[in-house]
Amino acid sequence: MPVWINKSYIGRFAPSPTGPLHLGSLYTALASFLQARSRHGKWLLRIDDLDTPRNIKGSADSILKTLDAFGLHWDDSVVYQSQHLGIYDEILDKLAKNKLVYPCSCSRKTLTAIYSGLCRNKQSPRNSPYSLRIKTDERIISFDDELQGLISHNLALQHGDFILKRKDRIIAYQFAVVIDDDRQQVNHIVRGFDLLESTPRQIYLQKTLGIATPGYMHVPVIIDEQGYKLSKQTRATAVDVRTPEAVIFGLLKLLKQNPPRELQHAPSTEQLNWAIDHWDPALLKNSRAISSGFQ
Ligand code: GLU
Image (tube, rainbow, N blue to C red; front, side, top):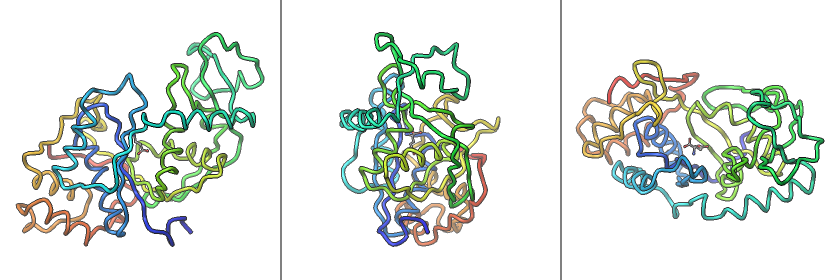
């Protein structure tokens, strides 16, 4: 039974401040908002701003303003990962004491896609840059995604010992997300299909740290005419905040919610209220990518 079933629902949206919100991220935000609100749950907002070289000045504020303009109001205060950097290091120290993480100074050249554990038993020189990796084993990690069904990965074979802290001293996404979702007591995660591959690693970390595993729902990603995921890399344009009702109506169609035509020109708050009452994520079952069609 999923852990959240007898508890009140706490969901979240956790964008990285690497540019303004584009249609693809607003789509995920809307799905996670509707899922939380339809369960009378909380919807938290966290800015994942640890990867400082990728951060773009001003984008965190612009993301908050855009969500507000679309009526996606969050609960509690916004959490910024960069505001509690000490916590990650404390937990890393504990893992190191238990010999679960180790330093690795392998260069990109010696690295293959799946790390072989070369530095596991080496005394890595601490005077050259090193990353911290967690030891994995051949355990199968499985979870039942609400839309994508049963997912099983063999961590050692499919991912190898993965990085918790990078050589540039930046805390890796896989680790930070697990710590923060737990700190915020998030018990249900709705996010894009592109992150499905990361989930078994995060569940492995939860198990290692004795943290409860939330429920997961990976919604399809929005793709452009060439089949590429809308992202900052593909130069997806920022959503147009001047016409929230057109954008929300279009997104509800992309979420396969079949909004009634009479709602097309209604204020976005009215559209959102309809969507909360009628939210049926099962209509997205097994779908991994959806073509935007409108922009
Ligand atoms: N910050 C991540 C991103 O923007 C998402 C984190 C998550 O939902 O787990 O891609």
